Picture 1 (spheres, rainbow, N blue to C red):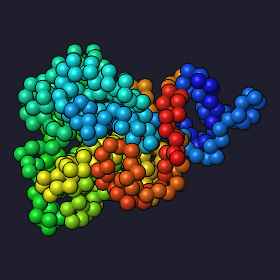
Picture 2: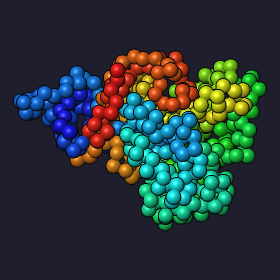
Picture 3: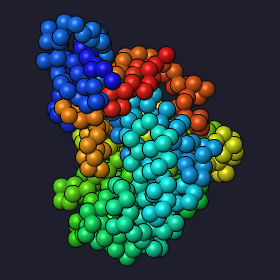
Picture 4: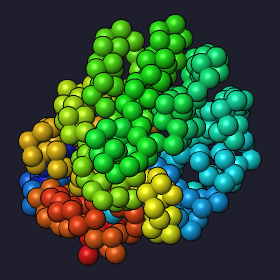
Length: 429
């Protein structure tokens, strides 16, 4: 691979506190050789022809901490090849995959298979999670130590929550001993059972069972109380309500933990569901506008650490049903960055804070050397025209499943190129 030179770019790299107009040099082996304002036309070899980005932005490759891939078992919804193509179009170069496959990722042999498939079929960096409990049944713990040795970087039951407090205490103790990262989907089953959307006026109007925000808060309160005594690496996958933000704000002053939010809950509210729009049946559910604004402010104040796509592809047959019967989840990995940039364009959150929540923060939580543009690191980055307008059309989405929650939405900001280890793997046509 030839050495590559990029100039006249707005470079934002929160990991290295870099926010300046400059350039980037990628070495022959796909590493970052130089970056910043010192890389300009005056400092480059005269024989080289640099790529002039004319003020476009260079961001580190996005690290998406919550992605569902259909492989193994649900390849008709998504597979490693279609996932990586969709991710690259959205500037995502690293993903953390959930264990909710068939079979569940809960033993060493399945991990070996998963890593082989990821290596053979994917063009992006795949970081698989294993389940907290066998078959995600919430009763027996998986072998954290053995699974970690095989390359598992975190443990979660994905769309399920550990309901048993005694079991959660045991899990946290094991995580503390082994240095494991626990990622919890916070939702009390007894309070949320059969619920489909946020509990409130809209649920009553539509005649649908609701999921109260206390179902989320009660699990967060319980886990953080346990965390006071068992200091392990603990991450709340997604929060969705103002009350959860209040709890997290108070507890972060006393104990160490992190939390994320879905881009869906930052951008949409329960009113968007309209007349039974099943593509907006999500978990956690879309809540009130007051909840959404509270989440945006928590991101702005860096109370929330991470933005995730919660990419959960579902085939059309699973969504073209009554609201009660329809599958939960939305495809979102390729619109994650553009939808996040909406918060910058409307003045809600600083651009650097958004990029930090998409790149360096998740990498720091996961303890992986991604999401940064450090010299010597893999050249995983995207080039973005942050002012380019476009409209989300499901037929133009690259993901195998087209269940986007933002069909026909007008966005501003588009990835024009994405590089992994110095190779351009996506270019906007």
